Image (tube, rainbow, N blue to C red; front, side, top):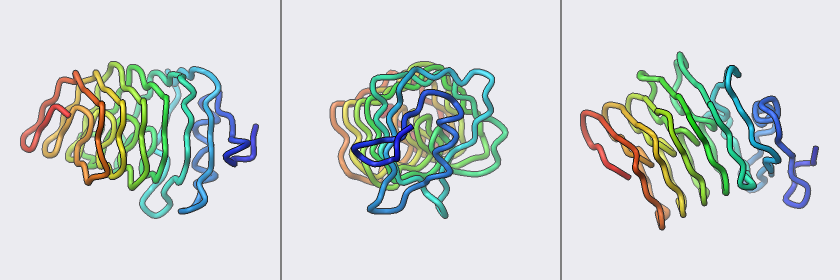
Length: 193
């Protein structure tokens, strides 16, 4: 339901609704609005990242305090890997639980988003699971520019270069009141947050 406006957001309550975001990516200055209405279990549901550099998702997502669990992405050959691949987004009040992203040849990898190319992420949490990529790998976002506020991660994160418990490569915009208890491993430029 919903028309995708601020006053009448698209309502998401199933895995199929989540997948349908790619069909309405929005445009800079004209985002599509979504509200998650129910906890969503993605166990057994094949997912691919939504949004690419050529067609970024420009969205505002109200997680509404809900949890998306069992996100699985493996054997994906591209970069920008996460629930959202490449996005200009505002995302708030969402938990990802028991993620398994295993793309050791991919760059810009995170549970919530591979690349956040501007926007803000507030009160979003990653609880459990593992995020594995090559470079620019973060528990929350792989490559981020924008405000990250009151977020946390508690998963394992591994890669080669630019690996962080929350953010792989951070390009600015402000990080405040965030923490990570993720276990992090990599070969170079590795950090807890």
